Length: 276
Image 1: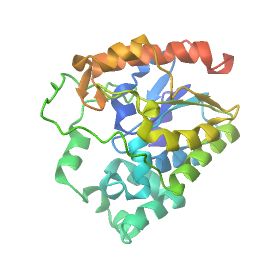
Image 2: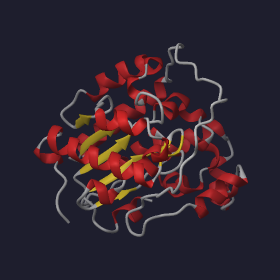
Image 3: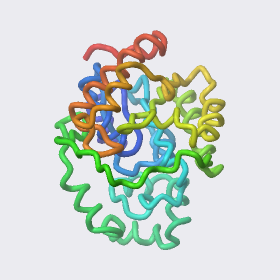
Image 4: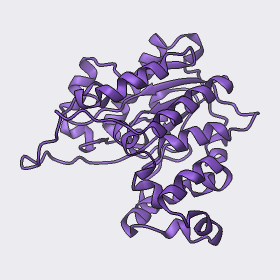
């Protein structure tokens, strides 16, 4: 996965789960960018990506889509069990493999046997082969939108949620590795439909308070709690979302241009996206 992401000598790579996969368009970000995020990609994967980055890489910055919901699950995330696209990186990264083995003691043997990519739900496996990709930049462009369901059970916003220490430790590793690799880490929080951006929701306030302390380093440009009329308008428009938590291609273009402008204005000279 790392070598595929670096083939075009990008200056910017996007890491994160499906919200980043469908929400950050490299062409709208500008410069030489590649979206290496994946459906269910965890914070452990992002840290492993930087841990195994070749010394002769072309990257200047990493944009990390901070998915609070996946952060809460830690290694217990269902995606840790069967996401076939993570297999190659886990084979070469012992720390990532250990996370898989917490969920599945036989994971290492399944990797060796070649059977691991086919474990888990058939629907998910088929999705990985089916989903559309824009040629060359890794971006997943979702078309269409899902109409609101007026009968959907309301979410619990009152309960304060917390994440396991392993997730915070992986986040510290990500920040530390970015500094050691001389990369600027830009952290964003892709929007959900009809809700405040996740990082600004009260139920995640404990998590974000700890995360903000981890982000307080010169290697990080933290854009997780940024809000504006652009975001407010976007989250209220169902036609810009493929479903409740994923932007469609049109919404991704709007959000990505907004993020690119924020990077140029708020992340300092080193973070400016270069021309191709």
